[in-house]
Image (cartoon, rainbow, N blue to C red; front, side, top):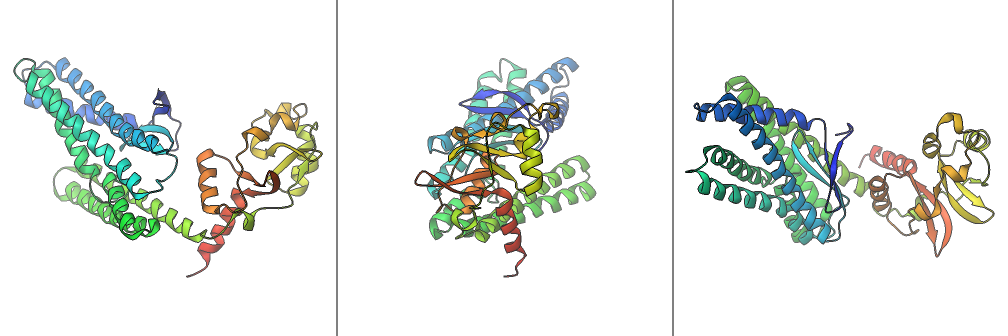
Length: 373
């Protein structure tokens, strides 16, 4: 999901967007549903079953958005920010900024999506009951969407991480054991088992079941679930490797200082290239004005480096995220990833005491993961 997204707008403060891979599954579902309608209702015109097929796909992905909005609304109500909802080839995903801090919150956020899918399925079932004798096209559309949303709920309740059922399982195990990491490890293990079942089933259906397309799709779903489960397991290993390390243990105390007023070209020649440091403090005597890195420099067109001053390109003090010396490094790295920043100042009682950078954390993490346990 690294390709540029197509932004649709904002709802409840959440950015709605489409990944380019979504168009693949939209076309496949449109083709599948249109073909099904053509077989079930041979008296329809070609235009009719294509129009109903397209409307069915649009409403199905509207249902997926509702599923993700349900997760997001519960998360927001529990104080967990949600940045975006993205439709992509395997459905939809809400980018929730951080993990729940209690198992009860995890359970409610996880169960909200399948509950919404069941509710949507019931609504379409009622529409089918009301229209089956009066509007064949609406009834056909409603029947397909009712059944599909119910199957979507059942699929998401499979107890394998990162599916909603896996998150529900993790919340239960977390509540029983009191250990988030062990609960995540168990849920991701089951997620990998589920993924391998999908992959093996997909291969069997494709090669020996006589349905190559469905088998291939089931195998791809399994591959996606396997990768997501492995990433979640890696996150547990990361947190365990950084356990007990505080900002005070890893921060750089001698931070390079740059005076305001110099150009970016001079900054590169006199400070960045000679020192090889990653970040610099823009200091007016003892007053911190902001932080400057090569990333900020590269945002400025190269032909303006000789005229733009460092204070114009820096991250200003009021925009900086700062941490306390006693904060956990794992939490700091999580915050850096969430905010898209590479370093944070360490502040103790209003006084700058050092800087923590992403590269230093990752270097330490790499060393720890290389040491056999």
